[in-house]
Image (tube, rainbow, N blue to C red):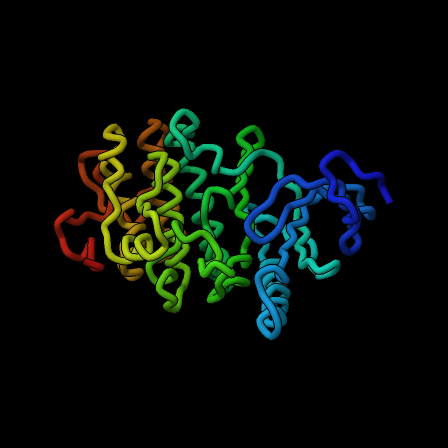
Length: 321
């Protein structure tokens, strides 16, 4: 058993076969620890979920079963841009998931003015996220909590990793002691916010919210209460990103608006289509050689006008109102 390092949690030195070294992060339901696999001597990350703090009785047992099922499902995903799950279990009152340790930092560090990524770089990162989501959706897995904090990047090694597949599912339909919906409400799609059945197009909406924040430094919908936020997400049109950053191309503004459509059938059909559109806009912005045009986009003379077109006053763009 290794000695505790600064920041280590007293009494928490081992989870499953892994040695826990120190806490490196946390969230609303648990914490993230740096750990060591004694079989390979490689570092890994362990995310713990304190299910007992949020659930009780039969609900706790259901949450445990759901956790194991979702963790095992996420563990079957094999994609270069999705974090690898190495194991899961429950002990010491904690459910835990062991995953590959990722260098770099999450995209939340680039969500404020002054820390923005170059737009073509951001669009290429987002295209890889969209492709990773498309792969997961083909396996029947919906992420449910796409947001900047769940995308790790390391530009030096060209690494992009989507994390936390299935975690939001554990809390789906449940509420905390204060009555707030578990998860990240600002990134939820209208159908997820209102408890309707969701599919991969819900993740596309959340990716649109993420793009909006990383491009503009603010969320498309903000409110002082959960009820007001829910009403905005379900009913109100998101602002045009060019009202906040006029220098952005019209094609990008239209793409973000399309991802934020209230009705899922009006968004991109899948993540592959969205990824192609993002790559094409990035290519045109930085002037590199142009790939073959994706079928999702309409070609025009203006190099920044190629996208699915619609009028901003067309009611189909704002079907929730």
